[in-house]
Each structure stands twice: as structure tokens, then as C-alpha cells.
Amino acid sequence: MKQQHLWIKSPLTVYTANNNNADNGIVIDTHSGIIIELVAAGCQPSSTIDETFDASKLVLLPGLINTHHHLYQTLTRALPSAINKSLFPWLKSLYPIWAKLMPDMVCTSTQLGLAELLLSGCTTVADHHYLFPQAIEDAIDIQVAAAQEIGCRVTLTRGSMSLGEKDGGLPPQQTVQTDEAILEDSARLIKRYHDPKAGSMINIALAPCSPFSVSTELMKETAKLARQHQVMLHTHLAETEDENNFCLNMFGLRPLDYLESVNWLASDVWLAHGIHFNDEEINRLGKAKIGVAHCPSSNMILASGICRTKELAAAGVKVGLGVDGSASNDGSNMMQEIRQALLINRLRYSADEVTHLDALYWATKGSAEVLGRDDIGELAVGKQADIALFNTDELRFSGAHDPLAALVLCGAHSAQAVMCQGKWLVEGGILTSQDTDAIRHRHHALAKQLVS
Image 1: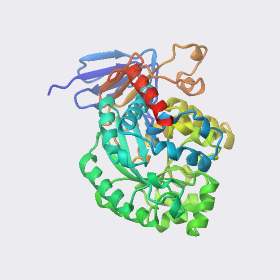
Image 2: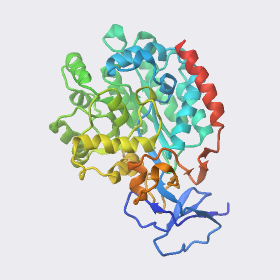
Image 3: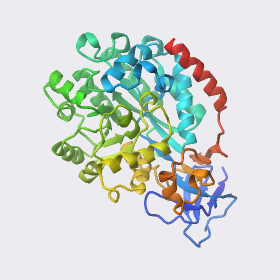
Image 4: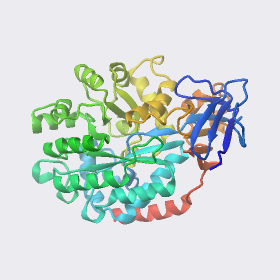
């Protein structure tokens, strides 16, 4: 197949996530979906150019990467029974509603959430689906089909809950499965969908929901299965002090000690939230090269606390960003999450210790590292052509003198153009693959049906 070289020319400014010089843009082979050249300031491409995209009024970024989400939760945004509650009461109010999920709800919520994220410049999404009532035992299969229609990259984590209320867990019995059923389906999904190659569009990871919703045996067996097939492991950990107390009461261990006891303290693991670790635990996490998905908006809405990002990174922990479920965030926007990450860290650290560049790094190369990928998250030759372009011709940016800083500080929320694997998925601020109005109308009707 003939190569087709596209020059994203002369961006207003560019962030590469690696200090590479691409001030005069990048050249993409749109057939292979690979970046083939970075064009330095004052230079012209050495490649033969077939097409040019004028980016002179646009800020160029690597495609943003969301390391933790619950797409089905878009159906329960701003739900009165769940508003103004901390994590455990919030979950208890929502579990019975989520237990009524149907296949069309999983499909449409996945499409809507992925569409929202793409429109905010996000090209790779890790979703954590852990509810498998009888009606949606094939939820991950449904999500694969929905993601393929939208067109972005996904890491779909086969979540699980096996410890119901009668066994001392938090979730109601109708939302849990047996260990055997979970492990069997996990193996099936890996074999059917997981693509370990560079540039893959679908990865599968295994993700028991949390220490308070799965058995110890399932945690151990899931780790064995994941390592047998060389896929990543994911779970929630140290999100709240309530969780710390639960682990102490249930296992006689703090969450990280419990994690180590089930063979999860390793570099193929990433954790959602990771807020309530002490200094000694942070050092152990760093030695293990674990990843943490920092979820600032969710942590603020549920009043869970502030992740110790600088200490984690200094210890060697991989830090990325996650939007988290829309029932705790009530939005699926990665650019807004970058701004939230900057702001919440300014409450813990001084103004010169955490910058907009740190927040952008977490959402790009940092998040790629968390997901175990070295083919995305930065602008470099040989990397995937995943990019986001932002227009600063809006009232909110008027008077801004640093366009890159303005994206974060002035609150950019929508991308002008987004490319994934060399294909335009957003053009002129509009999703190319699907009718977003149709998705929204269908989604809103299903949300009403779910809570009725």
C-alpha cells in the first residue's frame, strides 16, 4: 500500500512530552499510523509530503490518555440519592441501580463516554467495568464493539466482584460472581481480544474491583492468570481511610500489605487513586515500579483526599491521570482533568513545585507508562500518530501569552481536531465516526429507564 505523508505544519506551539523539537510540526504516514518525522523550528520536512494540515492557529499535543474510568456510570450522573456522600455510602446508594444494567445501556454509555473523551483530546481510554449481573455477563464484548465503532484505543479491564454483603463485602449479592466464573471469562476475553503488539487498538487487563469486593483467593488467582497471559493488573487501592480501616478489620493488614500478600506488588500493576499511603508504603510502591492513576475530580467530589503525586514520582512510581467514573466525576473530559490535577496539587505543594507541564506529562507519557505502553503518549519518530489539536480562538483564551499554559490555566475543554493511529476522529470539533446527538438522545432515555 502506498505511503501517504501528512505534514501537521507550523503549530502555534507544541508539547511533545519528551523535550523533542517539533516546533515546525510532525510528519505522519497515515497508512501505517506512525509518526515518521519531527520538523524542528525553521526546518522543512525531509520526507516527500502528499498533504499538509495548517496548524498555525492550533496547539499540538500527543493524544491524551485516560488511565481509569467507569463508562457505564455516565448513566447515573448527578443522581440525587448519591449526591454529597463519601465513597462507601455513595457506592451503597448506587450498587442496586447499577445491578439493573442492560446490554444496550452498556453499549450506549460506552459510546457516549468515549465520544466525550475524544472530543476533549483523549485517544486512549482504560475502562474498569466490574459489574456483571446476569443480563450483562458479556459486558466487555459489548464494550469492544462499541469502542470499535467510535475508533479510539482502549484498555478494557475485566473487573470483578465476588465478595457480596453476606460474605462481609460491600456490594449486593446480585452484582457478584463466583471466582470460577470470573477467571473463566477473564481467560476467554484475553484470548479473544487482547492484542499485545505495538499500535494495538484493544488491550485487555484484569481488574478485581477492590479489597472490599473480592476474595483473597480471587486476587491471587487473577494475578496468576494475568502473568500467564502477560496482561496488566488493575484495582482500586487506598482511596479512602474507610478502605484502610476495612482492610485492617477484614484482613488485619493495611491495603498495601494486603496487596503484597496476594502477589500484586509488581510493575505490571496500576492502582486507581492511591491517596492514603504513608512514606514507607510509597517507597515500597516505587521499588515495585507500580503505576498510580491520579483521579483529582473524583477525589474532590467524594472528599477522598489528595494524592501525593510528587512523593510517588520521586520514589519511582509511574503517575498518570484518570477521569474516573462519571457518577463521581460527572464529566468525561481529559483536558479539564489536567486542569483539576494542577489545581488540586497546588493545595498540597507550592506553586513552583507542580506546573502545567507536570499535569500535561501525567496525561500523556506518564499515563502511557502506567498502562505499560511505550508506543503512545509522546511525539517521537516511530510512535503512534495519536494527536490532539486545540484552538485558542475563544473568549477564554483572549489575552493569553503562553498558548500551552493557557490550555491548562484558562480551561480548554474541547479539541479542534483529534487523530488516532493516523485517522482523523474529530474534525472541526465534531466526531467523525458517529452522530453524537443520536448517542445523547439514546443515552438520556436509557439513563431515565435505569433509575425509574
